[in-house]
Amino acid sequence: MNIRKVIAVLLALPISILAIEVSSAAQEDNQLSVIDYPLISVPAGSYTLLIPDNNFFKLDHLEKKVAFDSAFQIGKFEVSNRLWNECFKFKGCNRPAALREGETLDSPVVRINWHDAYAFSKWYSSHTNKRYRLPTEEEWIYAAHLGKDHRNIEIQYDYSDLQKIRNISKRTMPLGSFKENAIGFSDYQGNVWEWTLTCWYASKDKKLKDYSIAELNTPRACTTRIVQGENRSHIPDFIVDTYSGGCATLEPAANLGFRLVLEENK
Image 1 (spheres, rainbow, N blue to C red):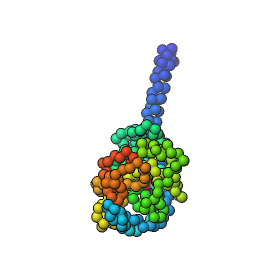
Image 2: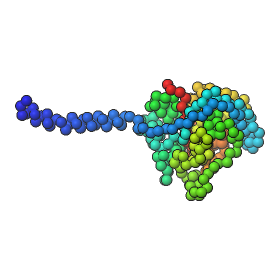
Image 3: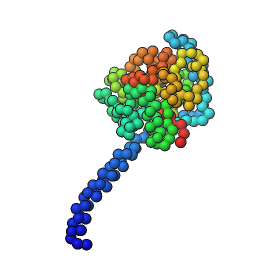
Image 4: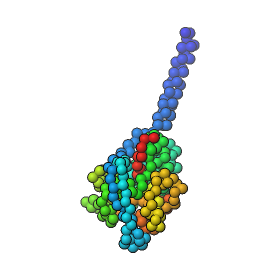
């Protein structure tokens, strides 16, 4: 090899190395960051879902028998700002998480309407090659209360930290800030309200009807969905109360987020 060829090869080396580095960086940028979304297993069982029949005074209850023939998996926590931003990064979600002062990437994502949460479930399913969706009201209540009477459950705040209590209506707290139940279902009595798949209906017959997941897991099913969970800040009944009015699917409430259920592998 003559001297000119040697010089040409040496001059080309930095460019080749740079090209490899750029290519590797691009590949890394196109890969989903490893962000754990922990799941818990909810055992098979049955319970009676108590649905207030009176839309205003909530005095009487309809009873709906609910049974789970096999265990199912649901998120231990709500979806975080960090995981939501991954969805935005890969264009599965239409905007980044909007953090208020004092909130962190490990707080639950909020100001999310039902369609946003639905889009996230579809994106996360495609990136994990698993089938995720929002939980039904029946699944959420069973995971939270394990068949116990779920009416008027007192929110179990940690009153040892009064400043935390004062601030909960102004900003969300990091995941795991509130108590979990016996199977590890966390933050169900504090932090944020949560979207479900279940449609809100005024009529008794529709409230008691059993709907398939396929019927519910589509934006066309209804325009008002039931939310679950608790948040210390007041939200008017006609907007989010699970029995007085549900929540309009296009309403991105300030303290409303979501968690996911893993159905099965694709």
